[in-house]
Image 1 (cartoon, rainbow, N blue to C red):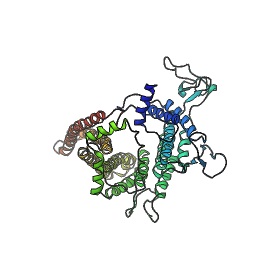
Image 2 (cartoon, one colour):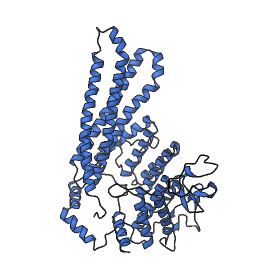
Image 3 (cartoon, rainbow, N blue to C red):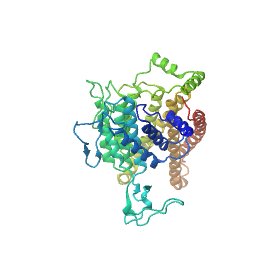
Image 4 (cartoon, rainbow, N blue to C red):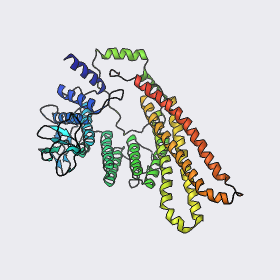
Length: 499
C-alpha cells in the first residue's frame, strides 16, 4: 500500500489531476498519462493499448452523472444524447464545470484520440478480451496473417474480433462540438485532426479541417477586428493590427499542410506573411522581463519549495493562455521565427527541382537559350533557399546560446529548430555538390576536345561547394556538441520529483 501511494504521488507530480475528481478517476488519469508518455529521461516504451483503455474508462466516469459528470448537459438542452452520423455522440455542455475539470476532461479526450491513432485498425478478441494488431488476425480479410511474437497469446479468429478503440475522429469531433472549451483547446484539436487526416492521405478533407481551424482562430478575435486573413489563401494581411497567437498557429499549420502536399505556390506566401507578422510583434516590456526573472528563483529557493511541497499539497497548475491575445516577441518567439525561415528555405530549394523537372521536356523543344535561362533561375532559387536556411541556423544558434538557463521553452524550440536547420543545410550543400560534379562529368568530353577554352567556371563552382561542404561539416560538429550539452543539461534536471 505504501509503494502504491508513493508511486501515485510521483505520478501526480508529473501529471497533476483536477482535485475535484474522485480518487479513482484521478488514479485512472495518472495511469493513462504514464502509459502514454516516456519516462522523464526519455527511456522506456509507450503502451498505447493500456493508455487507450484507461482513457476510455476515465471518459465514462467523467460523463457519468452519478460519478464525476454532475451538471453536464446536452448542447441543445434536449433529453438524451445527440449523435452525428459517422462520428458518434456529439459533445456536451461543460461550461458549468470549473476550469481544472474542463482541462482534465480535454486532456482525456486528446489522450484517447492519440491512443486511437496509434492503435488504428487494432481489434479486440471478445472471447478473451485481448487486443491484437490487424496483421495477425486469422480470417478471410487477412489470408496471410503474420505470426504472433513468441510467448504472446494465440492469434484471434476474425469472427471473434471487434474494433479495439473508437476512431480518432470521434474524440476530435467531440472536442470541437463541446461547449466550454477555450479557443486554443478547440484549435489544437482541429489541427491534430487535420494532421491525422493528412497522415491518412485525405488531403482535401484535411484542408477543410485546417480552414475550420482558421475560422476558430478568427472567431475569437475582438469585435471590430477585420481583414486579418485572406480566407481563400490563408495569407495574413499586410495591414493587420491584431494578430493573435492562434492566428499565427493556424496559418503556419495551413502552410505546412500545403508544403507537405507539394503545393509550394500556396505554402510560400503564407510562410512569408507569417514571418512578416512575427517580426512586427511587440517586444516585451521591462516589467514583463522583471516578472519573468522573478519566477526564476535561486537554487536554494527551489530546494525550499521542493521540501515544502512534500508537506503541503501542491496547487493545480495555472490556466495556460487561450491564444486569443497578441503574443510578444520573446526569445521563444524568435525561435519560432527561425523555424519559419527554415521552412521558407526548404520550399525555395525544393521548388527549384520541381520546376526544373516540369520544364525539362518543354525546354528541350524550345532551344538551348531557354534551357540555359531555366538553369540560371533554378540555381538562383537553390542559392536563395540555402541562404534562408543558413540565416535560420544562425538565428536559432544565437538565440539558444543567449537564452536563460531556466528558459526551457526557448531552449527546446531553438534546439529543435537548430537540428532541423543544420540537417537541411547539410542536405542542400551535398545536393549542390553532387549536381555540380555530375554536370562537370557530362561536360568533360567537350572540354577535352576544346581544352584551350578551359572550364574554370565549373571548377570554381565545384570548389565553392566543396568549401561550403567542409564548412557545414565543421559547423555541424559544433552544433552537435552544443545540442549534446543541452541534452545533458536537460537530463540532469530530469527525475520524478521536479518542482
